[in-house]
Length: 392
Ligand SMILES: Cc1cc2nc3c(=O)[nH]c(=O)nc-3n(C[C@H](O)[C@H](O)[C@H](O)COP(=O)(O)OP(=O)(O)OC[C@H]3O[C@@H](n4cnc5c(N)ncnc54)[C@H](O)[C@@H]3O)c2cc1C
Image (cartoon, rainbow, N blue to C red; front, top):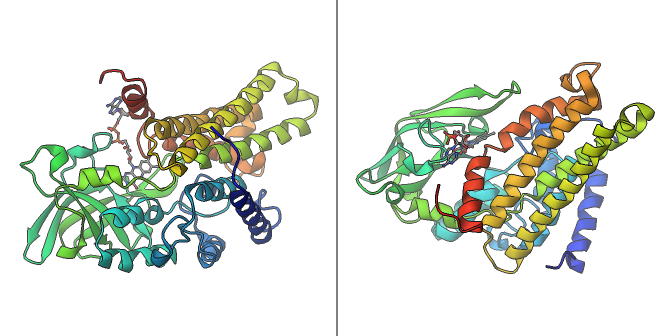
């Protein structure tokens, strides 16, 4: 495996760094924005203007073909971009339209769907949410019960979704619904594009343990959408989901964020003179964390380089996700201990150290080991596909 980036990728990295230096206000590090840093919805006027600048540069969906609003760039270019954005804590937000709606349309959508929806994702006209999980279907997603029934030129949708991130800020939803209740559970699911303002949709907020409104419950009551909002083949949705993998699956943002946080912890420890930095347990944990961050970065580079070579990373991407999200939790735990009682203070407290980052990370990093597949499920996948062990 070759860790070097190509000359073109290094040039692009320099361009991104220069852009970030020019566009992020000086002292951006001090203006801590936990939601942005954790890759969640980045809100506020500054975040919106910043994202508009990314769109103007054609950076929203770098690897998409130019005709659909992308830049036709390589996967490694996208990884370099994600790494630099995450390291700088830039308010990019997590764009589900870019992550999987566009890639799914590219593989399974009609030409009309591609031309209609993809450019609107890259120029930020549309915001997408993902309607997969239900109260009885999370890890076992194929158990989903929301129904879509064909009625003339329309589909009629009934059911309930849960944990829908950003539904309250999205104008389109990427929906998995059951279209054949008689078929085996993986074989009766289809994918739909749903306007979130359609009559019959109710969105109710769910507040997470950090006190934020990020996700929601979404209820569908006789919601009617046009027949051409079906994506790909009817009843083949499950398989389409598996094919429409994220363009960039390396989880590089996790290790880049962890590196930045670790550097801030190191700076704090050094500035504290003899007291904290001299304690063996703190020195050891900081060293451990440094090693783990390098490991996470290399696991991510492995995934990126596989994709670049045209291979589809499987358990390799699973391991990278598992390792980087658990690393985030471990690092947040170390940070909390290092700061002592101050570590538990909310960013709004005048006594908070490091702008209250640790308290935010500690709470928000838990969600990252659940979203997109829990650590237990990730370990199960790695055991079966990576180690060849039988199903548990
Ligand atoms: C921050 C965040 C954002 C999210 N955003 C979205 C979104 O936008 N759209 C969406 O559709 N969903 C979203 N989700 C939901 C997420 O996909 C699910 O929470 C996740 O898939 C787990 O499902 P569950 O919550 O139903 O837990 P369950 O599947 O009920 O799992 C409960 C526990 O059992 C364990 N478990 C389950 N099955 C196994 C197994 N086979 N082997 C070992 N252990 C197992 C799990 O690891 C877990 O500890 C989000 C979740 C979070 C935390």
